[in-house]
Image 1 (cartoon, helix red, strand yellow):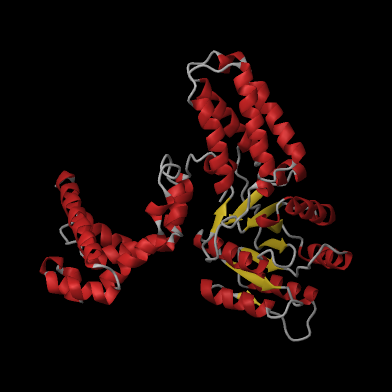
Image 2: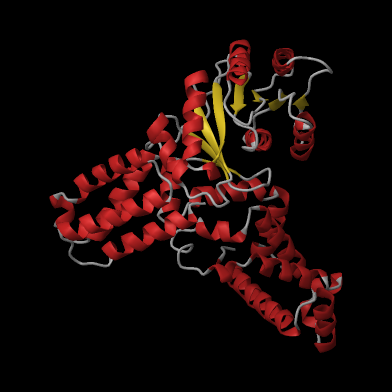
Length: 434
């Protein structure tokens, strides 16, 4: 997410950070470079101009020019203005109805990832202790209803589907009644998309809005469409009065321009961003955290959220007892930990959430295939070998190497690293109070 934009911005700001003294010409030249980077990232021209005007006014003040570290001060100004550009200081969550269910309509063009996003959002709400119900109101696209039902089975959450021949309003009405009867806190409505904004589509959505009286109308927009996502948001907002947006495919080749332009042009907040295909790959779009990611400052809160969503509580407690208690940490435990980390998402994404690490660690060092290789090596061992790696002699290691398709040297390296890990865990236990 924001990879290209982050690298280019960091390159420009690094030049300013390295200078002990900054003059007005230096700052103006640096901001011209920032302007070029933002426009190349497909940020709206007017939004870019207003952003740089605010940054320049603050950057040319005496507080910066006479500062001990003017470069760092400018980075802070850019960070704060990015926060403003993305919606301001406060992260805007979902608006909840005084009495349940809270109705959340998801709208958007066909192909934006709307149906998948409904399931992702339902999964997120369920993990927060809410009881969501999904309504399959896209009765036009072939297999759209079946797709949502399948996704519902994946996340173990209910989906309301209409009877054969029912129109959209009837399906929505029945879904709302069911949500009330089952005391569901949220009703997530998957609406039909089109290949373009047209009046029949908007008329149906307006009828749905009148029928359901939703607390949230969220536009699901494909971030890879760039400035067209901003135009689409304006069209839907004019017709329906959006309360926010969800940007999908932020893990792809999106240049980041849509994310930085939408709030500036429409005034509507980005509430969530899709960062992968998995049902857990939906992050909250906190402006401060997003600005931190863009400037490669990391996102610890995002990392913790992913860990909470991916970690098995019982398994985590068992592993903690092994590490801090008297139990022995084995290769089986290591494999379990590895799998839990993999469920958090691609390793290269996780590294970028750690402050000060993502920008410095080469991509080669976080190759996701490395984790698969480790898993293959451990799975090629017998249960006894995983519990007692000290019995692994030369012939056993050669057999494991053949079984996993990895060289013997790699097997030896893994075992050496695991042995070092066990030593560290013993030291940790030694520091724990009796």
